[in-house]
Length: 296
Ligand SMILES: [Mn+2]
Image (cartoon, protein in one colour):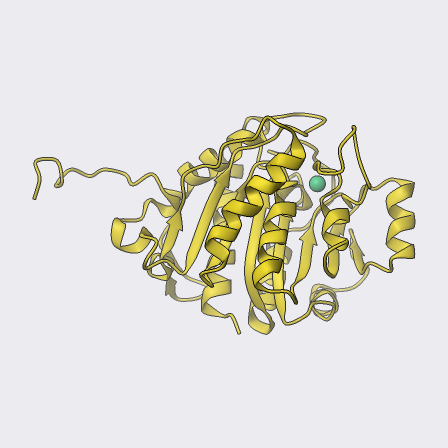
Protein backbone atom coordinates (compact mmCIF):
# COMPACT_ATOMS: atom_id res chain seq x y z
CA UNK A 1 0.00 0.00 0.00
CA UNK A 2 1.40 3.39 -0.94
CA UNK A 3 1.74 6.16 1.59
CA UNK A 4 -1.42 7.91 0.42
CA UNK A 5 -3.64 4.96 -0.43
CA UNK A 6 -5.28 4.75 3.00
CA UNK A 7 -6.58 8.34 2.79
CA UNK A 8 -10.26 8.92 1.91
CA UNK A 9 -9.88 10.41 -1.58
CA UNK A 10 -13.07 11.22 -3.45
CA UNK A 11 -12.90 9.62 -6.90
CA UNK A 12 -13.97 12.39 -9.32
CA UNK A 13 -16.54 10.28 -11.19
CA UNK A 14 -20.31 9.77 -11.12
CA UNK A 15 -21.30 8.47 -7.62
CA UNK A 16 -17.62 8.83 -6.56
CA UNK A 17 -17.14 5.13 -7.24
CA UNK A 18 -13.93 3.25 -6.41
CA UNK A 19 -11.86 1.85 -9.27
CA UNK A 20 -13.49 -1.59 -9.11
CA UNK A 21 -16.93 -0.08 -9.86
CA UNK A 22 -15.84 2.64 -12.28
CA UNK A 23 -13.18 1.05 -14.47
CA UNK A 24 -14.10 0.77 -18.13
CA UNK A 25 -13.56 -2.99 -18.25
CA UNK A 26 -16.18 -3.70 -15.59
CA UNK A 27 -18.61 -0.95 -16.56
CA UNK A 28 -22.00 -1.70 -18.10
CA UNK A 29 -22.63 2.04 -18.43
CA UNK A 30 -20.39 4.86 -19.66
CA UNK A 31 -21.08 8.54 -18.98
CA UNK A 32 -19.52 11.22 -21.17
CA UNK A 33 -19.57 14.79 -19.79
CA UNK A 34 -19.94 17.37 -22.57
CA UNK A 35 -19.62 20.91 -21.11
CA UNK A 36 -20.78 22.73 -24.24
CA UNK A 37 -23.33 25.55 -24.64
CA UNK A 38 -22.16 27.55 -27.65
CA UNK A 39 -25.50 27.74 -29.53
CA UNK A 40 -27.53 28.64 -26.42
CA UNK A 41 -29.57 31.73 -27.27
CA UNK A 42 -31.19 32.91 -24.03
CA UNK A 43 -29.12 32.22 -20.93
CA UNK A 44 -25.82 30.34 -21.14
CA UNK A 45 -24.32 28.24 -18.40
CA UNK A 46 -25.20 24.65 -19.38
CA UNK A 47 -21.46 24.18 -19.90
CA UNK A 48 -21.29 24.05 -16.09
CA UNK A 49 -23.93 21.31 -15.91
CA UNK A 50 -21.82 18.15 -16.11
CA UNK A 51 -19.42 19.15 -13.32
CA UNK A 52 -22.28 20.21 -11.02
CA UNK A 53 -24.20 17.00 -11.72
CA UNK A 54 -21.20 14.77 -11.05
CA UNK A 55 -20.32 16.62 -7.86
CA UNK A 56 -23.93 16.34 -6.64
CA UNK A 57 -23.86 12.60 -7.36
CA UNK A 58 -21.27 12.12 -4.60
CA UNK A 59 -24.15 12.68 -2.17
CA UNK A 60 -26.48 10.01 -3.58
CA UNK A 61 -26.88 6.63 -1.91
CA UNK A 62 -25.48 3.80 -4.02
CA UNK A 63 -28.44 1.71 -2.85
CA UNK A 64 -31.72 2.33 -4.68
CA UNK A 65 -34.74 1.53 -2.56
CA UNK A 66 -37.21 1.36 -5.46
CA UNK A 67 -35.26 -1.40 -7.23
CA UNK A 68 -33.60 -2.90 -4.13
CA UNK A 69 -30.35 -2.57 -6.06
CA UNK A 70 -26.83 -1.33 -5.33
CA UNK A 71 -26.42 0.88 -8.39
CA UNK A 72 -22.63 1.02 -8.00
CA UNK A 73 -22.51 -2.70 -8.83
CA UNK A 74 -23.77 -1.92 -12.33
CA UNK A 75 -20.32 -0.51 -13.03
CA UNK A 76 -20.43 3.09 -14.21
CA UNK A 77 -17.44 4.55 -15.98
CA UNK A 78 -17.23 8.34 -16.26
CA UNK A 79 -14.96 9.55 -19.05
CA UNK A 80 -13.04 12.80 -19.02
CA UNK A 81 -15.02 15.80 -20.23
CA UNK A 82 -15.18 16.33 -23.99
CA UNK A 83 -13.79 19.71 -25.00
CA UNK A 84 -16.05 22.08 -26.94
CA UNK A 85 -15.16 22.60 -30.61
CA UNK A 86 -14.94 26.28 -31.44
CA UNK A 87 -15.00 25.62 -35.18
CA UNK A 88 -18.80 25.75 -35.07
CA UNK A 89 -21.81 23.56 -34.21
CA UNK A 90 -21.34 21.17 -37.17
CA UNK A 91 -17.85 20.32 -35.93
CA UNK A 92 -19.17 19.76 -32.41
CA UNK A 93 -21.80 17.31 -33.69
CA UNK A 94 -19.00 15.31 -35.35
CA UNK A 95 -16.95 15.36 -32.16
CA UNK A 96 -19.83 14.10 -30.00
CA UNK A 97 -20.57 11.42 -32.59
CA UNK A 98 -16.96 10.21 -32.46
CA UNK A 99 -16.85 10.21 -28.66
CA UNK A 100 -20.13 8.31 -28.24
CA UNK A 101 -19.28 5.98 -31.12
CA UNK A 102 -16.03 4.92 -29.51
CA UNK A 103 -18.02 3.47 -26.57
CA UNK A 104 -21.36 2.52 -28.17
CA UNK A 105 -19.71 -0.18 -30.29
CA UNK A 106 -18.87 -2.13 -27.13
CA UNK A 107 -22.56 -2.71 -26.38
CA UNK A 108 -22.49 -0.63 -23.18
CA UNK A 109 -25.19 1.82 -22.23
CA UNK A 110 -23.70 5.21 -23.18
CA UNK A 111 -25.05 8.42 -21.63
CA UNK A 112 -24.08 11.96 -22.55
CA UNK A 113 -24.20 14.56 -19.78
CA UNK A 114 -24.84 18.00 -21.31
CA UNK A 115 -24.26 20.72 -21.94
CA UNK A 116 -26.88 22.01 -24.32
CA UNK A 117 -29.43 19.69 -25.92
CA UNK A 118 -27.84 19.77 -29.39
CA UNK A 119 -25.39 17.12 -28.13
CA UNK A 120 -28.22 14.66 -28.85
CA UNK A 121 -27.61 14.89 -32.59
CA UNK A 122 -24.10 13.40 -32.65
CA UNK A 123 -25.06 10.94 -29.93
CA UNK A 124 -28.04 9.58 -31.89
CA UNK A 125 -25.91 9.39 -35.05
CA UNK A 126 -23.36 7.25 -33.19
CA UNK A 127 -26.04 4.98 -31.72
CA UNK A 128 -27.65 4.51 -35.13
CA UNK A 129 -24.39 3.10 -36.48
CA UNK A 130 -24.65 0.31 -33.91
CA UNK A 131 -28.46 0.02 -33.63
CA UNK A 132 -30.05 0.94 -36.98
CA UNK A 133 -33.55 0.33 -35.61
CA UNK A 134 -33.62 2.81 -32.70
CA UNK A 135 -36.48 5.14 -32.04
CA UNK A 136 -35.91 8.25 -29.98
CA UNK A 137 -37.95 9.30 -26.97
CA UNK A 138 -37.40 13.08 -26.89
CA UNK A 139 -38.53 14.66 -23.61
CA UNK A 140 -38.47 18.46 -23.76
CA UNK A 141 -40.64 21.51 -23.08
CA UNK A 142 -39.79 22.67 -26.59
CA UNK A 143 -40.35 20.94 -29.92
CA UNK A 144 -36.77 21.64 -31.17
CA UNK A 145 -38.02 21.16 -34.74
CA UNK A 146 -36.80 24.37 -36.39
CA UNK A 147 -34.94 23.54 -39.58
CA UNK A 148 -32.36 26.08 -38.55
CA UNK A 149 -32.00 28.76 -35.93
CA UNK A 150 -29.65 31.74 -35.73
CA UNK A 151 -27.77 30.57 -38.80
CA UNK A 152 -27.14 26.93 -37.96
CA UNK A 153 -29.06 23.68 -38.49
CA UNK A 154 -27.01 22.02 -35.71
CA UNK A 155 -28.07 24.12 -32.72
CA UNK A 156 -30.20 23.50 -29.63
CA UNK A 157 -33.44 24.52 -31.41
CA UNK A 158 -33.05 21.88 -34.16
CA UNK A 159 -32.14 18.68 -32.32
CA UNK A 160 -35.45 16.91 -32.78
CA UNK A 161 -35.62 17.98 -36.45
CA UNK A 162 -32.21 16.45 -37.23
CA UNK A 163 -33.13 13.28 -35.33
CA UNK A 164 -36.45 12.96 -37.14
CA UNK A 165 -34.53 13.01 -40.44
CA UNK A 166 -32.65 9.91 -39.25
CA UNK A 167 -35.11 7.75 -37.30
CA UNK A 168 -38.56 7.61 -35.64
CA UNK A 169 -39.13 10.22 -32.94
CA UNK A 170 -41.67 10.65 -30.14
CA UNK A 171 -41.98 14.06 -28.45
CA UNK A 172 -43.05 14.31 -24.81
CA UNK A 173 -43.64 17.35 -22.60
CA UNK A 174 -43.98 19.97 -25.34
CA UNK A 175 -45.62 23.24 -24.34
CA UNK A 176 -43.69 25.83 -26.34
CA UNK A 177 -43.32 25.83 -30.11
CA UNK A 178 -43.52 28.09 -33.18
CA UNK A 179 -45.96 27.75 -36.14
CA UNK A 180 -43.21 26.18 -38.30
CA UNK A 181 -42.83 23.44 -35.69
CA UNK A 182 -46.60 22.98 -35.29
CA UNK A 183 -46.92 22.51 -39.05
CA UNK A 184 -43.97 20.13 -39.21
CA UNK A 185 -45.45 17.93 -36.47
CA UNK A 186 -48.70 17.72 -38.45
CA UNK A 187 -47.21 17.16 -41.89
CA UNK A 188 -44.68 14.57 -40.67
CA UNK A 189 -47.21 12.98 -38.26
CA UNK A 190 -44.76 13.02 -35.36
CA UNK A 191 -46.31 11.45 -32.24
CA UNK A 192 -46.36 14.40 -29.82
CA UNK A 193 -47.52 14.38 -26.21
CA UNK A 194 -48.18 17.97 -25.29
CA UNK A 195 -48.26 19.11 -21.69
CA UNK A 196 -50.46 19.09 -19.70
CA UNK A 197 -51.63 15.63 -20.75
CA UNK A 198 -55.34 15.04 -21.21
CA UNK A 199 -55.52 11.60 -19.55
CA UNK A 200 -54.27 9.92 -16.40
CA UNK A 201 -50.62 8.92 -16.06
CA UNK A 202 -51.11 5.21 -16.65
CA UNK A 203 -52.95 5.73 -19.93
CA UNK A 204 -50.52 8.48 -20.91
CA UNK A 205 -47.40 6.39 -20.36
CA UNK A 206 -48.71 3.35 -22.19
CA UNK A 207 -49.77 5.65 -25.03
CA UNK A 208 -46.24 7.07 -25.30
CA UNK A 209 -44.48 3.71 -25.11
CA UNK A 210 -46.73 2.26 -27.81
CA UNK A 211 -45.02 4.53 -30.34
CA UNK A 212 -41.52 3.25 -29.55
CA UNK A 213 -39.79 0.38 -31.35
CA UNK A 214 -37.90 -2.36 -29.49
CA UNK A 215 -34.63 -0.36 -29.25
CA UNK A 216 -34.82 3.07 -27.69
CA UNK A 217 -32.60 6.11 -27.26
CA UNK A 218 -33.78 8.56 -24.58
CA UNK A 219 -33.02 12.27 -25.00
CA UNK A 220 -33.91 14.50 -22.07
CA UNK A 221 -33.88 18.28 -21.83
CA UNK A 222 -34.32 18.98 -18.12
CA UNK A 223 -36.65 21.88 -18.98
CA UNK A 224 -39.30 19.22 -19.64
CA UNK A 225 -39.63 18.95 -15.86
CA UNK A 226 -41.81 21.49 -14.10
CA UNK A 227 -39.64 24.53 -13.30
CA UNK A 228 -40.93 24.39 -9.70
CA UNK A 229 -38.81 21.24 -9.55
CA UNK A 230 -36.11 22.18 -12.06
CA UNK A 231 -35.59 25.95 -12.39
CA UNK A 232 -31.88 25.50 -13.21
CA UNK A 233 -32.29 25.51 -17.00
CA UNK A 234 -31.65 28.17 -19.63
CA UNK A 235 -35.25 28.31 -20.92
CA UNK A 236 -37.74 27.36 -18.18
CA UNK A 237 -41.37 26.79 -19.24
CA UNK A 238 -44.13 26.63 -16.61
CA UNK A 239 -46.15 23.48 -16.13
CA UNK A 240 -43.99 20.47 -16.95
CA UNK A 241 -43.57 16.83 -15.96
CA UNK A 242 -43.52 15.90 -12.30
CA UNK A 243 -40.64 13.82 -10.96
CA UNK A 244 -42.85 10.74 -10.75
CA UNK A 245 -44.25 11.20 -14.24
CA UNK A 246 -40.67 11.32 -15.56
CA UNK A 247 -39.33 8.30 -13.70
CA UNK A 248 -42.51 6.24 -14.21
CA UNK A 249 -42.24 6.83 -17.95
CA UNK A 250 -38.55 5.87 -18.01
CA UNK A 251 -39.21 2.79 -15.93
CA UNK A 252 -41.99 1.64 -18.23
CA UNK A 253 -39.76 2.13 -21.28
CA UNK A 254 -36.95 0.15 -19.62
CA UNK A 255 -39.34 -2.67 -18.68
CA UNK A 256 -40.76 -3.07 -22.16
CA UNK A 257 -37.98 -1.93 -24.51
CA UNK A 258 -34.19 -1.97 -24.66
CA UNK A 259 -32.67 1.42 -23.81
CA UNK A 260 -29.24 1.59 -25.48
CA UNK A 261 -28.24 5.22 -25.03
CA UNK A 262 -29.33 8.53 -23.61
CA UNK A 263 -28.52 12.16 -23.00
CA UNK A 264 -29.54 14.36 -20.08
CA UNK A 265 -28.97 18.00 -20.90
CA UNK A 266 -29.41 21.71 -20.17
CA UNK A 267 -28.62 21.70 -16.45
CA UNK A 268 -27.63 25.31 -15.87
CA UNK A 269 -26.56 25.31 -12.21
CA UNK A 270 -26.32 29.07 -11.76
CA UNK A 271 -30.04 29.49 -12.54
CA UNK A 272 -31.40 27.50 -9.60
CA UNK A 273 -30.77 26.07 -6.16
CA UNK A 274 -28.26 23.29 -5.55
CA UNK A 275 -31.15 20.81 -5.30
CA UNK A 276 -31.43 20.92 -9.10
CA UNK A 277 -27.99 19.35 -9.56
CA UNK A 278 -29.04 16.54 -7.19
CA UNK A 279 -32.28 16.07 -9.10
CA UNK A 280 -30.38 15.86 -12.39
CA UNK A 281 -27.88 13.40 -10.87
CA UNK A 282 -30.70 11.26 -9.50
CA UNK A 283 -32.32 11.17 -12.93
CA UNK A 284 -29.09 9.87 -14.48
CA UNK A 285 -28.88 7.30 -11.68
CA UNK A 286 -32.47 6.14 -12.18
CA UNK A 287 -32.11 5.89 -15.94
CA UNK A 288 -28.87 3.89 -15.66
CA UNK A 289 -30.43 1.62 -13.04
CA UNK A 290 -33.64 1.03 -15.00
CA UNK A 291 -31.87 0.45 -18.31
CA UNK A 292 -29.33 -2.03 -16.92
CA UNK A 293 -31.49 -3.92 -14.42
CA UNK A 294 -34.91 -3.99 -16.09
CA UNK A 295 -33.84 -3.93 -19.74
CA UNK A 296 -35.09 -6.47 -22.21
MN1 LIG B 1 -35.95 22.61 -24.20
